Image (cartoon, rainbow, N blue to C red; front, side, top):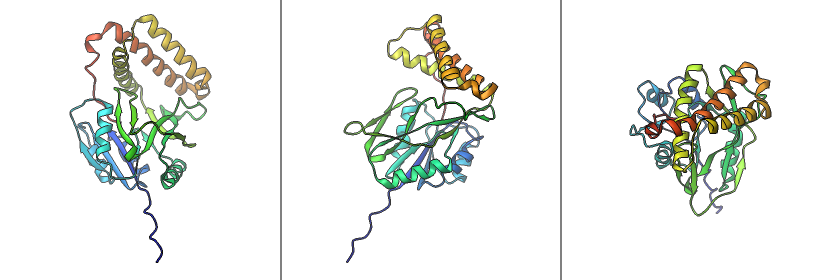
Length: 266
């Protein structure tokens, strides 16, 4: 009698949210091919949770904010699948990337998978701009122990690190849809970045901030071809440079407010 075929590896896609009613349905629609969708919400006061449930996701609310890493760790406890892909609420998986993800899951490999972004800013995809770098987003669930860090948190693997594989196709990242939203993100991420640097014992100041802003704007706008993306490309690069500047200003001149971090989901 022939042995039964091995069960197909399964995939969970997890999303962190806070007041993401504008994008959550579209985000989860792009993730609907997964065997399980989990949303960990940080206490939304809009229709995020209702829309996520209507899209077929499990929703778990943890409104006591302790940082991005803690929320990712909470999401990990709800994953019942062999693989876990972390998707942010302002991102979408394209059909081409979906095919890559499904192939990676079917392979059964024990790796970390990195994905690049195709930024969408102020209504325009910045397709001529080189990606600003990869982020590790998919893991074999049993190998992922936890996340650590305030912002740009890091995955800690059980039993040592794993090889890194890169997806060829990019995530759509709707990171900056309005000037107002960009200003809010600037304030939040400057504060989080300053707190991270304070913990590492780094110093702040006007000139350190200016040097960081100038270096990052030059890299993004010139070397990464932001200048080829019109006014939207300029604004995208400029806001990131401002964030770099205010991290160091915050670190030097507003130390009392460093750890009063505002909440945010994906």
